[in-house]
Each structure stands twice: as C-alpha cells, then as structure tokens.
Amino acid sequence: MTCPYLAYLREGDNKSFDHERPFCGATESFVSPMQADLCNDRFDFHHTTHCSIYQEYERNTELETPIDRMVSPIDE
Ligand code: SF4
Image (cartoon, rainbow, N blue to C red; front, side, top):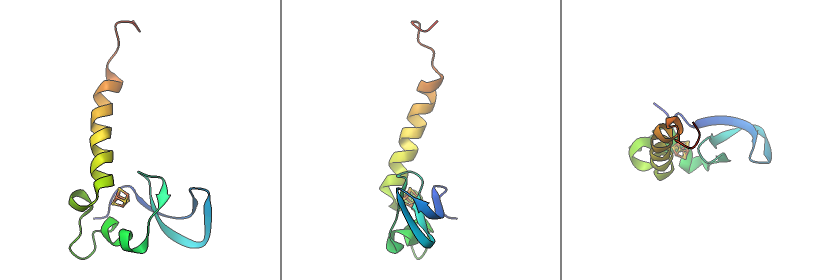
C-alpha cells in the first residue's frame, strides 16, 4: 500500500515537467525519487512508521477534526 497523500503529477508547486513525478499532497510539493521509495512502501520502508511528514500530518488532522466540530458558546 502506498501513502494516501502520494500522487503523480506533471504540474504542481509552481513547477511543471514533461512527465509525471511523485508529489506529496501533505506538503504540496514534489518529492525526490529516493523519498518516493518510502512513499510507495518499497524495500523495508513504510510510510506510517518512516515518514515524519505523514505522522505529523495525520496527528494534526486528528487533532483538528474534533475542534472543527466544536461550537463555541460565543458563536451560538
Ligand atoms: S512524503 Fe510522506 S506524507 Fe508525503 S506522500 Fe510521501 S510518505 Fe506520504
């Protein structure tokens, strides 16, 4: 299984290429071919345990969701 934030794009982050390249949706930037091995869980890598960007993005997403659902007494 690959990282859910990995995509292959020709354009992004104000750059364009003549072929698709690995792009991280969490950082919204292209990643190096070496990093893409980790994103694709190749060799002994796994994105959930070896990518600090994934871990931080998931942690922030988990933290933001309950707060987004909360209604402030001031807003009522
Ligand atoms: S850099 Fe990390 S978060 Fe981004 S696509 Fe790769 S594994 Fe996923």
